[in-house]
Length: 227
Image 1 (tube, rainbow, N blue to C red):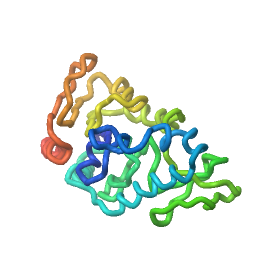
Image 2 (cartoon, one colour):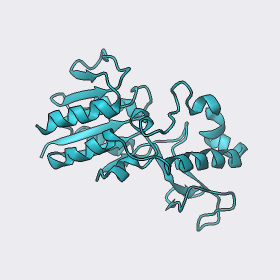
Image 3 (cartoon, rainbow, N blue to C red):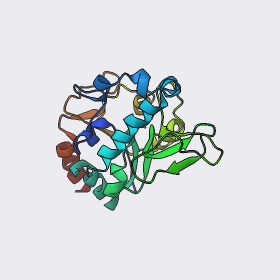
Image 4 (cartoon, rainbow, N blue to C red):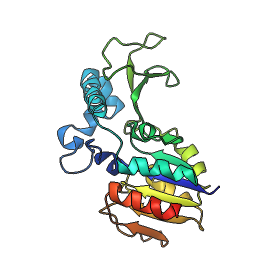
């Protein structure tokens, strides 16, 4: 069975109604990155950080997977599909994808501030000051903040190196280390990039560009691959 690796970014979740961070009107225009997405910001004002991610969780509970998420599930009829996502939502899982690797953490999980291996599912949307791990330390969002290591990148690199087909959906390929995965795609693998603003990358000659939103471009490509 051929292996498809799919790298997804904010563009696929935006069509479900989740605000992206980098686009015009996105979350970074409302908050400074340094305040809500760094460990230093957490140390300065943990309540602000908790409120920020509580609002993200509340919004996540109000949206559903879209046509792009659902199309990727259909690929599993014929291929071994591994999704690598930069998104922290659970829309791939809720759509039914069986193998999802989260590079930047998961919004619906929290972890200890003294032991990063102590990770818990959060019941509901709210994490509060005073919610502690079993070692007695305050719980924090299970999110990879700016300046922190991306522990899943090595596994993502190994998986990418096994691809027969590599598909990128809804990401600018500007965020590292995730963007570096494209360098590990085998030379003979077919490569597709679905994004309305995508342009050809000078260092990747065989990349097929599909200038569509995820909700249109993904079902179309999936139908083509299932023929």
